[in-house]
Image 1 (cartoon, helix red, strand yellow):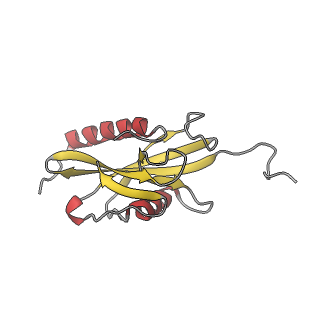
Image 2 (tube, helix red, strand yellow):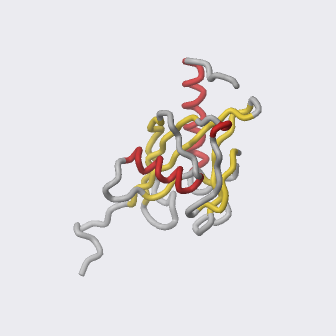
Length: 151
């Protein structure tokens, strides 16, 4: 019997969440150190595979909480879709990336699930440097619209 219910295989879908915070007047991004292959030991954006019945944003928030312990109370925005063939050595994977802001004073983080650790930090796994660059451009554009309050 076939592994697929359709004639052709389908790609896997992942969700990633770029989280920024201002710490000591420097823009930081939340990264996890991967616990397992591929890219074991490399820094990556928190994220993972979307569950079959799960809305996209819910999946991004779930993965963030599982991997870092962080729950963002504020809004997140869809940042982009990343699906270049070969971006994940496990197979054809398309990632929907989100972006949000955290208050580091109220953001206890620690590695969990398949993340060995979580840090506010930057050699990244997969194509996460590309996703992060888009996230930084988003942050700069958003910041021009309204200033980020300083603590």
